[in-house]
Image 1 (cartoon, rainbow, N blue to C red):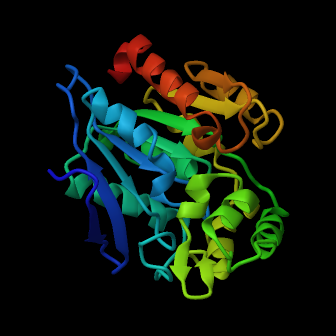
Image 2 (image 1 turned 180 degrees about the vertical axis):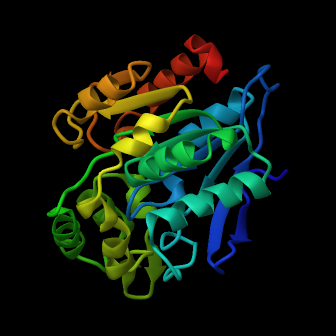
Length: 274
């Protein structure tokens, strides 16, 4: 198993998924499982650099990947549905023999992880959601995302200019460098298509079916819907919830050390997740 080396996996519908397989750098703890890390909308797998470095040092195998339509994966995939994203994660888990896996997903990646855990509990050992939940319906969401993407002054003239605008070095490093500057590695319409199901659909039934140990991590200044974490707990009293101070929606970038501490504490205190 190679470490940090980009690879490509082709899914049944012909979509190429770029992923990295991070080998453990210490003895693997007894009973532990590999990790699969899922980024959010318009993001890329490089956002997980911190966690994908810390966990292998603890003896865990970690796989990160660019979701379809993102990063180095197929830019214009055949489908952008929620099911297609779930199938990609299932394909990675089965092809790389990760099951039972611990899923860590932020935002839309967390939503994908949640749906996967609901549909295929046989593949999952535990679920960690970062600023993600059943949500919906949210009719204004596509318009909001479109306005956000349209506000990007791309191409950015430099990496530093991109970092200043986007707020994080990791977001800036996800851009593609061309002669005229740095461009997003995704198409606007694909992003809108990808997020559109959450505008019309809520996924509380899928949430209620989950039986695997679950941790919800939210940011003090996060963007989850008002009352959503409380409703998640009401429907699943076994849910663990950690609030990270001085963090927004991108908890994994705002407070990576605190996220790592929350993940490891969850794995140590919940015997079912070990």
